[in-house]
Length: 479
Image 1: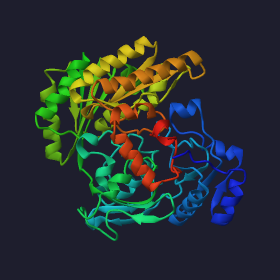
Image 2 (image 1 turned 45 degrees about the vertical axis):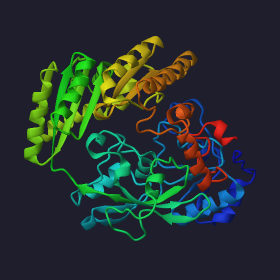
Image 3 (image 1 turned 180 degrees about the horizontal axis):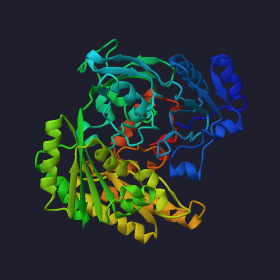
Image 4 (image 1 turned 30 degrees about the vertical axis):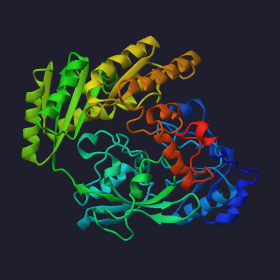
């Protein structure tokens, strides 16, 4: 199969004629530049300009756009809020960017059946603010809740901070409305169903979850929601060694306690947070673990007390609270660390490169040490934090992006971190996806299974128009 080639000299006018005057189509260079980036280091270093942008209003706009693109063999890149960190929303082959951010409505809440129908452009925090009025919650929490879209979460099968208890986004997707590459609209998860489970037919919903916009475009989602936990408590434990922090996680889970989150901040992350939010006054430690528990008041208090009891022999200091203001203050330390990372080195910025590895729990302390050693080897400042209970770590290099030598060192660091994850028996991406940035590691990680993925892609998208240039290495796509 060859690379999709677009006939682009008059793409904007031809699309306008095909879609009609009611659809907003952008082809002015200044407007297109806004769509040449996502949050990735790859985009920062090499933005990709689309040839035209279609701002979809409804499923008809999406279907008509894909039908046109399929017939004309024009690449299409679906895009939500572009908060992704792996280049997944970059138009690697030019063509059309399909902007889904305007499709952001709650279509219907079926509270009695614990489900909600939403469009893909709805922002995660906005969905949960709406659900809170009915005592409900969509529990996956990617950490970028106020920015990211739920469609993006589904497309990357996001996990996030509360994945240890609530699992990945895909566990809450009951069905999807999807437009296939040729413009055909299908419904997965049984048409007109309000059931919370089904064993009918192939599990197509799971096929599209995590497919990164490479098999079709999601235009509506039927999501499972749950009653919102009434109470939360937080335990903060300080550790003199990374090894003690890792042992604490094993001890808590071994004691039969399932926190809703266990987050780690290493010494560099602690420093970054204290620069960014001095009022938090985080303690000087090799690592801090934040354990969150939720549920009813009695169980939350008991679980927090038990966690403190279990980790005290391993920690230098432990505190816990179920008082809402203190819980919020402790949790703020974790919620700001991404933004805080860039503050640790004046004149520099945090970049997303090698930022999302996931390793076995037993090897987390060893991996954290190796990340620090690798940072020293490449003479880089790296802030590390992450979801330690699932082994998902986020090393954050901080550099002056105008320094070409530093850029080269970051690229080598990112490669080393991805290879470290594989050496530890893990994966190169725990929740951010493959996109453009991790193609080089797909064959090693998946072996012959990668060929099966490509066969599925080729069956649904024979002309490779859907988000081409992502996930699959050139030896497959250009064969």
